[in-house]
Image (cartoon, rainbow, N blue to C red; front, side):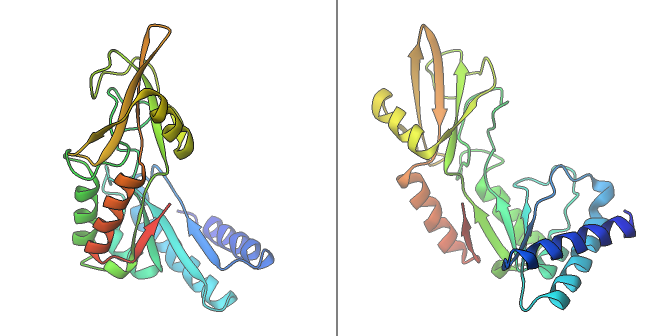
Length: 221
């Protein structure tokens, strides 16, 4: 909300991008409160002007949330200002979730990728050429109550990168949840149950096809 701070931030960012000979910038503000909704638009407008004056054809994108819990994001205006909104289509279930579940569900839940994309398409008034759906190349592994699907968690989960989750699945078994298009497995270690959800080549390819069918700008990792 400070014009001076906005200007300082933009000038520092532009200088850094130019000095590193980069192609542009991706802005990632998280936990945005509703009170800053208009100021974020103003910041991005000022940033875009400065970058286009200081660089030749800069790429300007933003990381934006899967769910706008507090109506803090003006998707329509931000899509118009930027070259793309990178939608963080993951962490629907996160490390602190009360139950284990899919990181990036394509169906099966009220809040899932289908909800997110419909929300963006509606609020941007079909600015499909500005929407990039980010997908997770990782999963979460939670301590849980039992081996049953969507078991209640006991503690926070830990992130598992794609290769580790694949390797663990080879060891402990493989399940595929058709509702959410997500693989998962449970395992027992020292009489304690754990459950891991992640994305693999099958679930990701299904989501790639979904992205192609939506005819949006593309996908991101």
